[in-house]
Length: 604
Image (cartoon, one colour):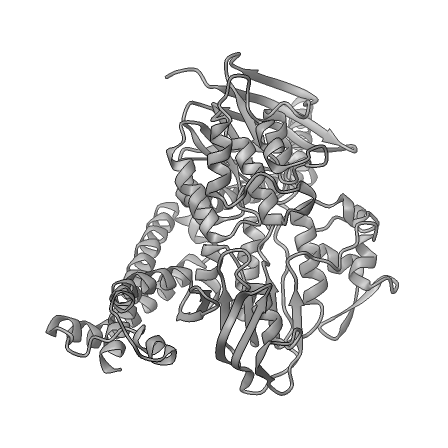
């Protein structure tokens, strides 16, 4: 095997007296597809900056092959010294590089290059930074949260581009689907040290859980051994003095080993408090329209949102997602149409810009509103320090300013502030930005347990698939359509509808716009379900129910806390069968959904 392009060995770094990296290592080979994962604040960005040569480690070896070129995409690029986007992007080129590639990439992502960096939106700034990193086609691309602020079409464009590049990739991202699609090796940065998995992100989470379970088992064994040694020292039959001294030294060694073990920090505790049941009707919109500067964002949009619905809103940047939310909540007047809000609504809104977080405000003041050290959480008074601990903030951080937090920590703080208030309608605008994967899991679990109604805007495909029951997306000229299911369900339905829509578009028609809109719906009345399809529609619900029962049985068996230590082989066998059954269930549900859609279209 060829030597690595870049090697980091036994890297140590301390910030403000607190060790951040205590033996981290990483090797990057030609054409690697590597993801660097870990919790917010674990040091992922710092390790990447050390690899890029922007930060010097306290200790460790950083070995670069002399001919290797490296480009680094940072989370918050500095545009301040550049007059235009093109000038900024071309600064990433090496001497002799053709600047035509900059022009080509700018065109592909919808920028001219003449834009003023000071006027860029978050998505435009991220796209400009991507062009600067990608244009030189370096040997190693270090990309820190490359999908942040990008819409789904741009994320999919980036995936296609990166899949064709010859550069080795090191990725930090909170986007599960992006990591699953792009990576073949995983570096897990945990408590200052790294572990390597020779598999992409798709295999990471089950491996991580197994490692943590084994670690907890070893800690339990060590605790029991210490108890036995202490009992022997106190109550054992006195032996030769030399033997007693040896046992005392062994006990001291065990205690030191236990003391030096770095315990897993645990999980945040997320809970959204229900303020009581709203009316059955939450929001009813009729004929909403909205335009800006002659651009139609919303055109004759109608929908009914009922209690318990979970609606995802997705689409390209600038397509009107946030505008649609504001119209539905009555926070912005429409050009035409009307909105009716239901009764007994308590609305909780989390905006994507986290505008309520002021950089100079201390964390404790941010959660209490500057009113002492207590906060009302779900109607109960709690100590603010204790509440911040639920969101994985250390006691010493409570008096620190918001400006000192990482992007992920700001995201957790925004969640802490928002979820303290009871609600029955959650409105979340890009809630996944900067959150680590474990916190994302908790947000998903919280939403699944939430008794109220949810509307959320997101570009995270996996998050949408896991949380929403229907998806709203723009389909051109201000027209929006609601699809049952998450993002993947929407894409399947769009693919199924595409041939019929194409026939409708290509056929000449002199009917009114409203009748043309009706004809855009699939009409296949002359067709019918085959016997096989009818049989599948009748039998699939029973098969799905049986698979759900099997999954519940496997989960109950794995919930046995002693199973892993008592029978590790059985544990892994059950885990494997659970994974296979979940895949079978997903396939059966998809088959049923497609057949049900076909049946409904035939009955129209």
